[in-house]
Length: 388
Image (cartoon, rainbow, N blue to C red; front, side):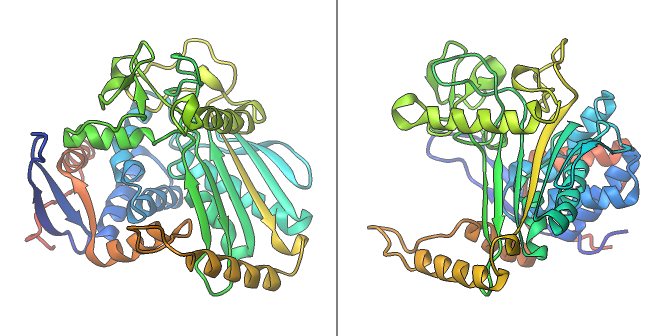
């Protein structure tokens, strides 16, 4: 059914801290994408929506955001089985003006509702100069950058943000009131690659903790705190009642600024759209139960498209963006550093490498994908020698 099964298998030895060995299996990116499409179709997703959702996960893996790629597939299936996700949503605009809209995602995949919302934002920007869409009644939408980058092909700046599972404590608190609440901004250039910010408003995304758990590694100090609000390196701290820290960590290192950014995303994504906000956000993670009382509908997103020529010539702007990028790229590196990076550089370079050499998946992720294949009657083959 699919071409080019897998490339190779690599063993990673235990590290100096005595953590367990684990295996990484390298898969062809197109194979993973086609398999993911089949899983979404088995859930009942229309084929075109399944393709969009699979592409979003695949791009996350290609860009090195392994925590939000195919490793998340089981999580979407789990939500669907719990009837917390609608595989066949009938999305509709609840309210709109020439430049704004509120979209009800009908509890669909955020991987589908967010691209639909961004397309609406782009179409409005073509008419009004800017387009802004707040989304309610949605689910986890993958990497924020995927949706923001949709605006680039139209000579527009794309903005994307979403609230998420309440795992983050406000500064000076041990209560879990916010999500990792990412922000993405994509800006086109002329000859240079686009400038792409895609960042959580926490010190790290929750998926990175899940990666550490699979590898049996501790978390760096400053990522999380325990249930009493004390700093910890326990990668399982969230499952023990602990919480994540806002970007910056503690107050002395600017954690209050990360708290403000996360709060802003929560308000734009949910208070503005009519979705759940703060501690009422329906969690994606399996170790948290949905809140009994809700203040809105589903998870919320906020998407924006800004037409450059609504401000100045797109050609002139992109020339200046080239100059900006080249200037910063040529900044003198500090001691021990080879070069200065532009936002989007690491992900773009890794995409090229992984398109050529494949996507590495942890053995536990592979086992989960094989379980899905068994459940849905699909073929998933991890054997590099079997290239049907």
